[in-house]
Amino acid sequence: MTIPILYEDDDILAVSKPEALAAIPERRGQGGSLVEVLCEQRGERLYIVHRIDKETSGLIVFARHAEAHRRLNRQFETREVEKTYLALAHGVIAEDTGSIDSPLRQFGSGRVAVDPERGKPSTTEFCVVKRFGSHTLVEARPRTGRRHQIRVHLYHLGHPIAGDPLYGDEATRRGFTRMMLHAWRLELTLPSGRRLAIEAPIPESFEAALDTLRRASG
Image (cartoon, rainbow, N blue to C red; front, side, top):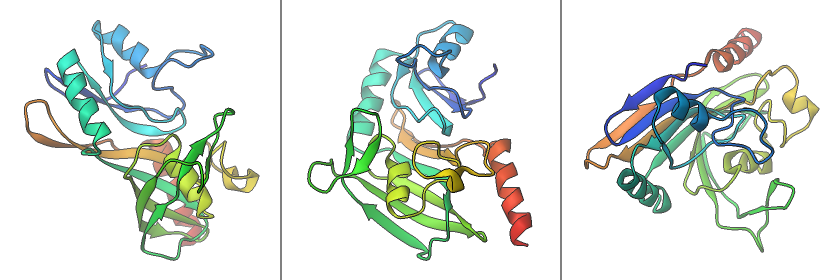
C-alpha cells in the first residue's frame, strides 16, 4: 500500500489517508493502520498528533520527533489549527451557511449523540458548496475536536452524511460505496514558526460519487 505524502520536513509529515484504513491500531486488532504502515515503510517512529475516522479519507499530520509533537499537540488543544472537511449530506440544506452548536456525549457503545445536559460543548460551522437533487455538498469546519463531531452534527441537523454506516438509515447509504466525508484542508503553524496550509486531493471514489449526482441532476 502506497500512502501519498503531501508535505514533509524535519519536523512533520503530512499524508493522505485512504478511506477504510484506520489511522491508529484498532482495539480489536483488525488489520493494519496508517501509522503502522508509515512507520514500517519509512523506518522511523512517528508521533500521533490527531486522527480521523476509519471511514473518512484525507489529511493527517504526524510529528517526527518529541518536541514537534509537543508543539503540534498544543496547537490542536488550543484550537489554533484550522480544519476543513468536505461532506456530502443527505437531503437539501436550505441555508447557505450555518453553525451547529450542540453539546456532544459519547456513549459506551462508541456512538455519539447530542446531549444538551451532559454533553461537551461542540461547534461545527458549514457553508454550502453545491446542491444536488437530493444531496448537498458542504465545507465543514469543526471548531472543537469531538469524536464523530461532523457526522453527528449533520445527522442532528437532519442531513446525515451519505454512506455513513453509523449515523443514518439504509436510504442514507444506498448507492454509496464509501462514507462521503473527506479531511480536505489543514492550516497550522510549523515548529519553525511558519504558517502552512496543506490540502489533500479529493479521492477518485469521492469524485465518482459526485459525478454520478451531477449527471443525475442535469
